Image (cartoon, rainbow, N blue to C red; front, side, top):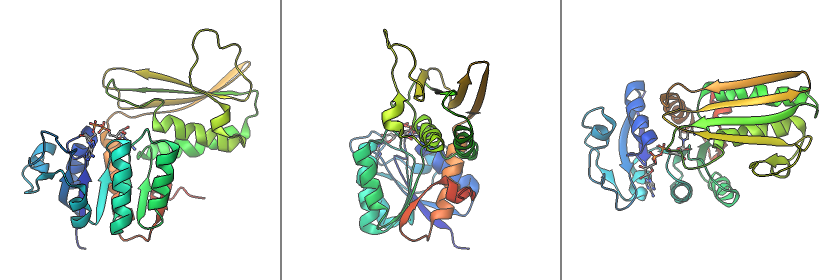
Length: 270
Ligand code: NAD
């Protein structure tokens, strides 16, 4: 089978570099393009050397449009504003986009959904197998347990993470809300400080920890008088997200326009 030509926007970032090295390790891919933010000191450097996999003969470009011209599938783990520009390029060129950036707001989410009408877009806040299974388990538990079980979502990530709560914590919240048949937006408690008063029954609470090099830990706690059920996931290495994104790239290549997620790749859709 022909190799899948991939491009990595933000190829100098922590995830960007890992995507290049995991694509090389997986086989069946050729990294043909990479870009970085305009003005980045990494422009012009070799994408493979940055990722520690040796020279690939592909220079880091400032022009994301050139990545979409050259690659069949573009992987994007950057920042929300850049991802929106990349989604528009996917729509213009029809190229497949694997999108992992988190911290995307509602208006930006709408722009991604719009782009998915014209290009295949694989969008996931978390590309690990374990977390995608956890989403199903949380929805199931929330459906089975009534409002006397308070739902709290706790996450911890490394000190460099810029958004909070994590995109994964939010999709876990959405899964719990779906199970309960409630709207997460109007029923979540994102910050507690000072004198917030007693916990409101039926709300979903979030708590955030930051420190060190933690790749990503999430717990969903269902607490009732007398018992507590905890469902959780611990990522030991960020490589699991890169590997998942590479499997997603393989899956989405050649698919028709549409919005896809990891449940499609893992066969978890009901
Ligand atoms: P990072 O800061 O190390 O990397 C982001 C890179 O994007 C940087 O190199 C930056 O220069 C680059 N960038 C910014 N603007 C750009 C532009 N216009 N064009 C090209 N490149 C641009 O961050 P990171 O730790 O690699 O994480 C990146 C994103 O991926 C975050 O939102 C993070 O939460 C998310 N993430 C998602 C998953 C998942 O499974 N979905 C897993 C890990 C991280």
